[in-house]
Length: 224
Image (cartoon, rainbow, N blue to C red; front, side, top):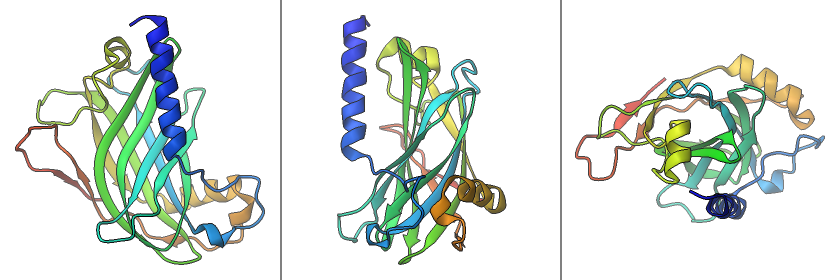
């Protein structure tokens, strides 16, 4: 893929993410604006075991309203990572209701080689009013895809970028953990508005992993 095409693709990705992104809680804020919703907290870790030279530079989760709920709400909670970091604390403000994490997203590499992943899942949770709620830790490991029924970590194109970074022909191993003390300590260190706030411990009960398109294999159910 030539440089012009790479720039165009990167620009399209950036525009798409900007359109659907929901910024997390402001790290400079000293109090929570509850009119924007409760604060949902998730920590995410991505290790690229398949291509270890390409550590993540950006991590995100896509959240949607649950079926039957009003369509408004949700978005993408994201953070950048750098210098070999593999984890991030993600925050998002959501109005009370039922939701689900629907995608796990990431990016690795530097221009001109930038790979991206978007892995479809389903992990339901509920948001109470005027609360800070901790959904737990999602540990992701990108591994070589050996079973054609498994979902790829990312799209096949751009071919070189996705192959070199391991997302085009990799798949994700997903583990759910409860790291309440560790993650809440990091959260309160980063967000002054939450330092004196109680944080509800409500780790995800399960996560369904989709299979590749056309596969008849059942979904994988992941539990803590």
